[in-house]
Length: 603
Image (cartoon, rainbow, N blue to C red):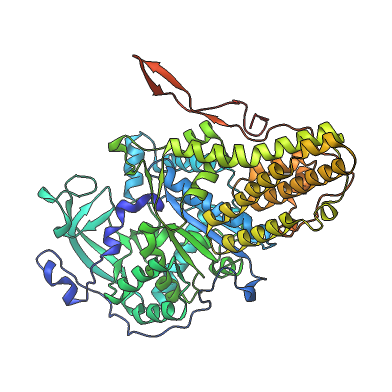
C-alpha cells in the first residue's frame, strides 16, 4: 500500500454521488443513479478507543503492530524499507518489555496496475505477485526484520475475510450502488478531477492522458460517520500521531466527508464483490482488511470474529504520511460500520530524500535498499535511518553523512570502547573479571549516569522517539569513553598494588556499560548487539532471552571470562582516487568483506 501513493487522489477527494454541493462543478461529467436509499446518520460506540502505547491498563493485551501492505507493482524501495525498519525496532522494544507482540507486514496484490505490470513482463498476475512479494520477504531477511505475520492479499484466507467484512457492512446499510462517469488514470488506478489535470487531460503524476470511463460502482457511505469520527478524535487525541498529523485529519473531516467508490467494474484482477460477481472490490477496501486477516491462523477456517479475537484491535498502524487519510478516516469508518474496534494509534511518518532532493527514477537518484545493505550491512542501515531521521518528520540520505555517522557512532564510540577494554582485560587480567560489576561501581557516579540514560532510552522508545532513544544509548558509550580516558587504567596497571586493583574495577565498569548498551540498542542494531553480547561471553540463547530488565546495573559477575577481543564493527572507508589530476571520491567500501553474520572486523 505504501508504494501506491500515486493512486490515492480519488480516495482523497472522492465524489459523493448524493451531495449536490460536491457535484455541482462536475455535473456535466457525472451522472449518478443510486439504487438504494442512503441510511440515516447514526452514532456508534466502538469496542476500543485510541490509547497511548505506554498505557499500563492494557499491559496484558498483545501488542499488534502493522506496516502498510506494500503494493507489488514494483520491487521494494527505500521508503518501504524505512517504514519496516522502524516497525521492527518498535516491535523488538515491546518484546524486551515482555509483551506478546504480533508484528504484521505483507503485500497488497490486486488491482489493474498489477495486471498491467504482469502483462508487461509476460507473466500472469499471480506469477508477478509471487516474484515481487518474495523480493519483500528477501529484503526483510537482509534487514533483520523479525515479523510475526506476512499477509498477502491473494491468500485465500484474506479473500474470505474481505468478503465477510463486505457483507457485514452491506447488511448494515452502508453500501449502495451508483453510476460514475469521469476521467480515469490507469497508472494511478483512480478517477481524476478535471481541474487537477494537465493539458490534454494528462495525469500530473504520470504525464499520460486519462481515459474517459463510465462505471456502475458500489459506494461506501462514509459521510454517515462524520460525527462519529469527530467524536473519536476529540476523545482520543493520541489516535493520530504525531500531533500535527492529527490536525491534518481533523481538518479533512471538518471539510465534510463524502462517500467513495469501493468497487471496479472493469478490473478483473481482484476479489469479486460478494453480491455482484461482475465487479471486484477496489484495492484499498480490500487491502486494509489485511491487518485483520493476518491474524487468522493458516490451519483455521477463515472467520472474521475468530481473526478479531486473535489480537484486534491493533496497537499501532505505522504508515507513510501519504496514506494517512485511508488509515485515519476511511478505515475507522469501515470498522465502525462492521461493528469492530478501532486501532489504538495511527502514526504517519515522513518521507526520505536523497541529498536534499525527492527520489525518483526520472531523476536517477533512487536508492535500492538491497544495495545499501550489501555495501554497509544491516546494522549500519538500520542505525542511520532511525538515528538521523526524527521519526514522524521527513529525512535526508547522504552517503557522506551516512559514512560519517556510522563510523563515529558504531565503529568509534561503541566498537572501539569495547575492543580496547577487552584488550586491557586480556593483557592484565587474563580476560577474567576480578569483581562483580555492582561492587566495582560502588560510589562511582558513572553508574548513575548510565542508569539515567537507560531510563531516558526506555521512555523515548515508548514514545516512538527512536532517534532520541538512539542518542541516549550513544551517550552511554560517550560517557564510557570519557570515563576510560579520565581514569587511564593502562597507567594504573603499571603502578601495581591498589592502583592495579582500581584499574581492574574500571574495566568491569566499562564492560558492564557495554552489556547494557547491547540490550538497550538491540531494537535498532540486533546483529551488532549480539556481537557485543557474544564478546562478553554470553550465548546466543542468553541474548535472545534478554529483556529490558537486563539493562539494570549488576549483570556481570566476578570470575566471568570474556571472549578474546575481536572488533565488532567494520569502519567504512571512503577512499579517493586521482582522476585527471583531480581527486574524486571512490565507492565507499567496508574494510571487511565477509558476510555480516560471520565477520569479525576492525573497528
